[in-house]
Amino acid sequence: MISDGYYTSKKSDDICEDVCGQQASPTFLSMSRLRCFLLGLDFKAIVFLFFIVPTFIVGIYFHGQKITYFLRPLWQSPPKPFISITHYYHENVSMETLCKLHGWGIREYPRRVYDAVLFSNEVDMLMIRWKELYPYITQFVLLESNSTFTALPKPLNFAINRDKFKFVEPRLTYGKVGGRFRRGENPFVEEAYQRLALDQLLRIAGIEDDDLLIMSDVDEIPSRHTIDLLRWCDDIPPILHLQLRNYLYSFEFQYDHLSWRASVHRYQSGTTRYAHYRQTEYLLSDSGWHCSFCFRYISDFIFKMKAYSHNDRVRFSHFLSPKRIQDLICKGADLYDMLPEEYTFRDIIGKMGPIPHSYSAVHLPSYLLENADDYKYLLPGNCIREHG
Ligand SMILES: *[C@@H]1O[C@H](CO)[C@@H](O)[C@H](O)[C@H]1NC(C)=O
Ligand SMILES: *[C@@H]1O[C@H](CO)[C@@H](O)[C@H](O)[C@H]1NC(C)=O
Image 1 (cartoon, rainbow, N blue to C red):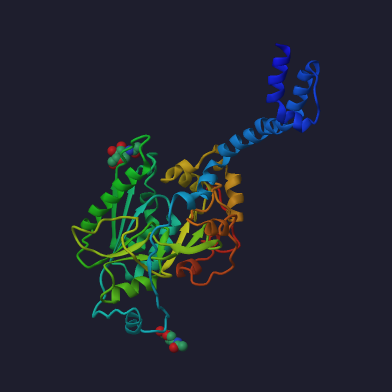
Image 2: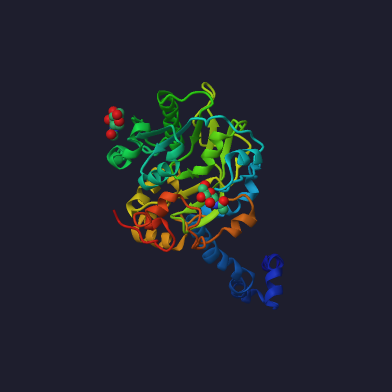
């Protein structure tokens, strides 16, 4: 029995004895086994069990989102690329020449232009947008709700600030829509519902076939000359996406020039629907600015982080700490501690870390420069925000 047991256990311990390099007697066996267990191969197992596994679990807990984003190129292929349209512009070149350069004719009179937005709390961006577009807009259409997309009650911020926008009053169609306040519903449902209400408001505003309609968020601002070009030229595509320069927090942090969600439509009653996703292949280059999280007050950042459709990204309550937010704004780093949303490893790695500072304030909306004192926080070198 003893020798059998010895024999079998010796056999099973072959590997260990190779490692420890000794011939054990039966009595010595249990001791040497323990030592082998601790010193030999199994030391690695201990490290693995008590160090690597917990680190891994903690790592997944804090950085799980980063890991899935980093691996995105493996699970998601990039969307079909757009067909880019070269955008020609210089202030001293005539409209006729500009239209011809794009392969379009020129009209005898310009199209009417409607600018329609869903408003939340971007008061300053709205001012800069409307001042930029003012010369060429027939009707400004603005809809606001007393509910955020995430079903939180919110004040009617436009109604509260309406006095500041007296200059658009004669051309303004303003609408309110009551929130549905469905807790736990996907925020994109409320968003779709509000966009539907915007379609009705546009009809109330008197939009007609072949009028130009700008569909974009408040912070996606087409440049004035882009809209002038599109209203004067004939034969432009029925729908065009606008490529905008992407900024974060202010015009100090440009992270790329690839924003594409804004679009311009030649309105067709019955078919044109207000949307904020991809609707065509065509993308007009360098057509304006998209300034995300470009808020004056820290409190606006906190509101936006809770209110918008990606509120699931606020994974930890310390993400909403004012001091943390202020530090990140000055660094040009991500509020949600996430990796760039890109489709290739090259782009993800290239965009990791804070956005480099830029000291260019060339080609920005004119109203911003004319009122630089008021909007200093949007210009390079002024990252400190008020508390509000
Ligand atoms: C550009 O146009 C403006 C007015 O449109 C004119 O005053 C100016 O002289 C022009 N500059 C050149 C270089 O042609
Ligand atoms: C939101 O607005 C609707 C319609 O005006 C109103 O019936 C509702 O009571 C409002 N809800 C809140 C929370 O303000």
